Amino acid sequence: QLLSSHGIKDIAEIDAMTRKSIACPAFPLCGLAQSEAERSMPAFNARINALLDKIGLPGESFVFRMTGCPNGCARPYMAEFALVGMGAEQYQVWMGGSPNQDGRTGWRWKDRVKAAALEETLEPILFMWKTQRTSKAERFGDFTNRVGADAIDAYIAQYKPGTAFENVVVEELEPVTRTVTTKGTTTKPRGTADRLTSGPRKQQVRVTEELHGMLKAKAEADGVHISDLVEQLLVHGIKM
Image (cartoon, rainbow, N blue to C red):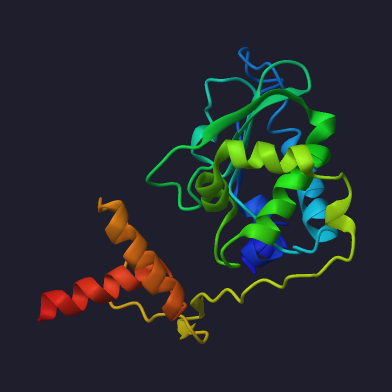
């Protein structure tokens, strides 16, 4: 209530694309900037959200980064989708990073894409993701990493602009569950794991890609966050 009284929004009031977006300051603060970033990102997020709605993916989102130059202060090279400044109103496009920001970087797809061409650039890729992903659980970065640049280019070459807007089938998001604490009480939505330990999670543990895949599949099947699953496995294992 205190934060709300000072005009600070609750996380639930902020759309998912904005939550997953980071931009560097760029103009007018950085002398290295070649393109806009922080000042333009809200408009770019609004345009992406509008495009997702239009093709039948309302509420979908992905990790988006935007920087004014190749120094990459907002970590664009790890994002599911990123725009790296290459001059006035033009960007290098990166895709394929991990939705969890671990295990891999993305890859450079195109250079000098005009800011005004955002929708026509993303339209076929988002429609390809919608129609060819293995399930709703396959995130944009995982999808683009799996199929690769060649497959994306081949799809775009035969794609007819506007196809994504014909006979649109709206795909609703899977419900997201999280533990909410209010005035000392905790409400656990269905499908959310109980925390077995207290305090913030501070450390990272490195595992093989095979093991990460096993943990991720189990967490998705159980409807819990992968960190909650790992906590359960570790605590029960230690007690044994």
